[in-house]
Image (cartoon, rainbow, N blue to C red; front, side, top):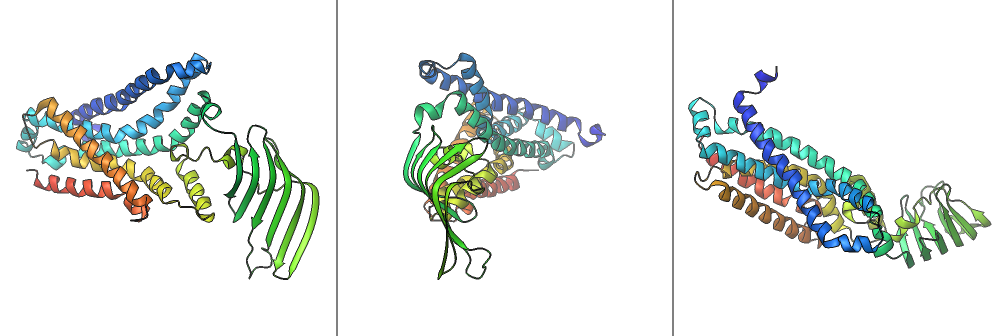
Length: 364
């Protein structure tokens, strides 16, 4: 059955594409790892980190590196595969046997879909592995503060926490106020205000609040007050580290987690445009693998004598231009000059149009 679906030429194209794709997808992250380890090994050893933990941390860092390089690996594989077929007159031979250029590159486009799915999977896996990477290198202990003062935290369910002092290592809060606005037309969903002089975090049980007051305000003229010595709020589920705000980097959050964080930030009146661009890019970058193959395949036929140097130049130049476009659209979306979700897709749209034009101009 597979032989009917894949002609010998298809298998040949896929084999050549796969060799370059996997060599690039694995080689670039290994190269980045070597450079990073060379620059930071002394720092990690000064922290008295076990050598095994350092080695394991770099293994956990691979998915993040791969998710960034897979679109470039797709481009390199498409350009070098088609460039080689062009230089050896194999595309000319395929056309003479009745196969169009569009039919010849079909295996590459199918492979680019696989690359896009792999990129999407890596982008969802990398936040988990990045956290483990940071834990093994003890980044929070050595680079982040463990206290936060006089801040507001927008949580889910319309709740806002106002905290005087948070100490992460001790798992304690001094003076906390929890407010939730009710719905005027819904007596079963009243406004309430909970204050406590202290709170203590236990990993098994969550937060316990001490020495406080709960005000339930079902209407503008009614205030039902309860005093308590100790209380557990089932909605107060955020860990001390989460309220510290040290794990809010987009690369450390999966798509859904980033969406929840954006919602919380917008509820508290913060500007989430930059994060909205980052969230949209989590979907746009995997699609880039398909777009970039559509662009690179016809571009590789523009010369028959460029050789390897030409392929490297085209691939690097395209990658640099694409990265510059992403940075520009990030800035445009973050400043609110364009809808963040639209801004994230502009590079794909531009390269997609250019790819269709190049594809239409190729002699079939």
